[in-house]
Amino acid sequence: MRRKNKGFTLVELVIVISIFAILLGMLAPSLNSILGFRVQRATNSIAAALDKTRVEAMNRLVGEMKLEKRSDGYYISYYLDRGKASRSEGAKEEQPEKIAPAGMVISYTTDTNPEEQKLGVNESVILTYDRATGGFLPLQDVAWEQEDIISTLEAGNDIPLRRTGSYCLEIKIQGGMRTRIIEMDINTGKYTIKAG
Image 1: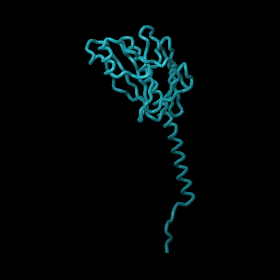
Image 2: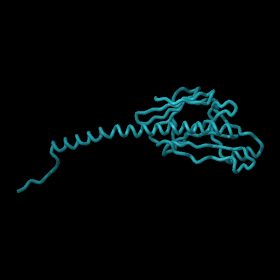
Image 3: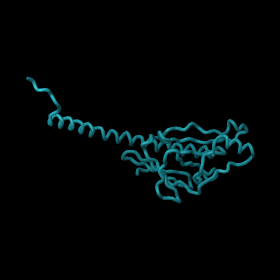
Image 4: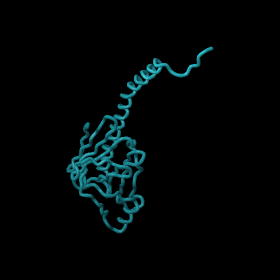
C-alpha cells in the first residue's frame, strides 16, 4: 500500500520561506523609491501651486490656493477672480488636482503653533499672497465659493477674507522613508525646499 501525501516537509517549508524572504528583500527598495518619487512629486506640485497662486494674486482681485485632504488623497484647488464686469465669467474655482495618495502625510506649522498640524480628512489649509508686497497673507479660515464672490462684488463690496492671524511657515510631506519640507518666507513670499 502507498502512503498518502499529508503535507509539507520541514525542508520544503524552509525553502519556501527563504524564497519569500529573498523576494521581499528585493522588493523593499523598489517600494521605497516609489514612495520617494511620490513625495517628490507632491512637493513639486505644492511648489508649482504656490508659484501659480502668487502670480494669480498679483493679477486678480482674488487668488488663493487650497490644499486639502479627502478620503482618497490630497488635492489642490484654486479660487480665482479677474474682477471683470461679467461676474459669472470672472469668478471661478478651478478643478481640484490630486497630488498625493491618502497614505502619505502632509502637515504644516504656523508662527503661532510650531507643532506639526497634520491635515485630516476634510481639513484644509488656504494660502494666498499680499498683492502689494508679494509676501504671504495670514491663513484664511474658509475658501470663498463662486456664488459668494459674485454676490459680494456685485453689491460693490470688497471680499472680506477672514484670516486666522497665523502665517504658515512650512509644509512637510512624508511618505515611506522620505520627507520633504517647504519652508516659506512670509515677508517675501518665497520658499525653499529641503530634505527632512
